[in-house]
Length: 462
Image (cartoon, rainbow, N blue to C red; front, side, top):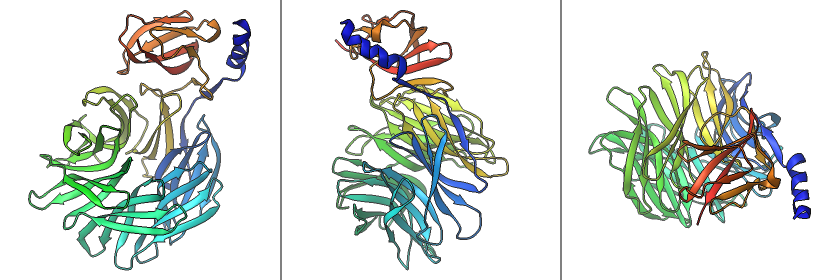
């Protein structure tokens, strides 16, 4: 046994961990608008529109950051119109990027799809334009054979003609088809997800009978044919900003507006036949809007909410976790914004924490990109160590209740939490015994020093 564990100990002491310590801003002399973040092979990419506030001068810039949040390099994407702003981006296995962007030909708004490497070299691009209509993209996903983009189709002088569109572009950058949904309703899409062979779109529609704005959800196949279109009827005005989900649920998130123009974040769970299971609102006495959501591996959803006071001042970001029954597991506040933050991306990291990428506005309304790293319980991280390449720290895992630290190393302290963020126990030995606990997933913090710790999951099964 000693011969087996000697190499493991060698890795443990010298190579198995890297440190993450960031809560970063990425300032630019020009405004950074439409900030998005995506996971990368190492670190993350942040895309943003660089805008000098003049006409037709915006362009896309990517900021590549490492696991510490430090900038490694930046690169620009050339414009394929008068100006260009990113909507979403996908990182592909061949180290290419697919970028959905909005731009203009000087007369009409149009949508461009760009295939680029991570140095800014463009391999192909496709622009969809219509001389009679404006097109503006809001979301993009990929299927096995195509990229799908959804958003708003509108006639500039007749807003009652606003419709949802779904554009399909082949993996080689060729036009496949474009479909329009929602006639004769005034509507536009804000979110898009794929579930096997179903494409699920959500957005806002104006109910002309009740004279209020309501969410809608539409299910189409991979050829764009409608299988189901449904209005989600609520007793108040509501507008989605996005959609997330798992095998059992569709979570629609966004905001509501009351008669005094106060806004509250809203979260709606629907089942897979698009029936509403429950609806919940966040009201902290300020203006809240749910911006981003990702489904959790244990069910439920994580949301970021942009929060501000009257006049878009004193902004914060809320990070909230809900279970599949709509119960709030935790809500943490990330402070430090002079004006309204616009949380635009939420990414689950390899150590089960979260990276939040946002646009921040200062008191002069100058916008810049920033990113914050939290642990799995929503707390901002100042010092954390993470395993590299899936290196096991505690074994066996899963276990019936007894877990051992690799090579019997004695930790400074181990803290055990449930998924609601409640601290359950502390251990100061190299063995964790939770045989008396219920089966399920637990979070541990293993402190190697007083200010450095490792996060991980323990899975207890019979």
